[in-house]
Length: 355
Image (tube, helix red, strand yellow):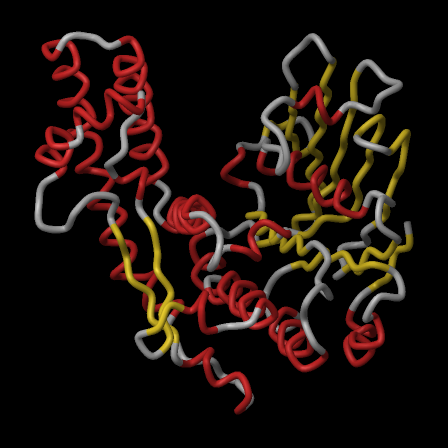
């Protein structure tokens, strides 16, 4: 599948815009504030049904409007698939996905890999960024794990509510048991996925790595499951009860997993420059491309925001070379004129669109 067209009305700063993507790799150019990121956000919202910036979609409505509407055309061989979304300020968003007169399920849509500014702090930033990257990748590969994750989150939410309400030990024990049951299932899925696929994929040696960037072949990723390794989840919950009651939330469990990146036994965040970290993170996304293609027949769309930021010419060339070799559609943004000369050898592989 490939995206052919996107329609945006009263979304963010746009009053109305209709963009022909022509099923090609696209480079979206424009100055800061021209709406480049908003175009990617609209595409991501239509396919994944989530905003990258807010949980309250009212914030996406243009200031002078009462609601927004979005549309997407996706070509699947000779079939045209349409996604339409409408959101009014006082109503929930409605999203319809159809091919002809047949409704298309969300799992039959292409995977969106959105690489945005916050993701590029993954190595040095908060654990939530690494956790989201890991979980989303796992959901795309091991589809049943998303159900296990949702079951665990329901139990977690109830335990957290109980902690805030300062319920009795007996009542809290009920939600401890629910959390242990669902947590052990999820934790086993996470551990198995990390050992069987995630770690191997990230530590796989690069095919085309220059001497200056040899660190790309020295990465070691360590999995932290979310509570001490030497005890069970049940015991961890018991030992953290007093702390959790004081905090008002659950401080241990598979929802607290983390990944640590090392190079020669040193934390990568203290070893690599910002540009090297950004290079590593983008290439991390690409390393899962082949397995995602085999697990999801509808294809992959990469949305990469502000690709030239903090990448020198050599590293940008490496990213673009590997990106254009992927079996995927690329929609990337860049500030017009800023480091665009570094992209010159690859510009013939992208259709340019100016905002």
